[in-house]
Amino acid sequence: MLSVFAFVDVPIVFFSIKWWRTQHPQPVVWGGGSMDPEYWKMLFVNWVPLILIAAMLTLIRLRQEENQREIDAARRWAHAL
Image (cartoon, rainbow, N blue to C red; front, side, top):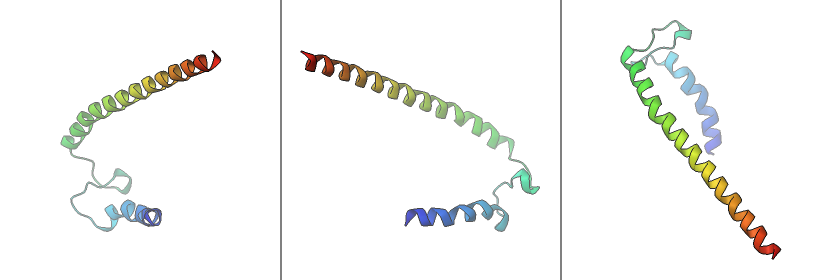
């Protein structure tokens, strides 16, 4: 049910900017204006923590994989005895 709703919702969200003109900045593709410079500033400021979180999660996952390989090697060694 959620997939059906999401499938129907995607075009509505995409075209909502054109159908219901509100305070949302219009994409440049449709000839609208560009974003306010304050929005750009906050976008770039928020990218930094997002990239740091992604890097941290990647390092945690790599460490988990290394630990799992060590555990598997210890199990193989224990079963070989």
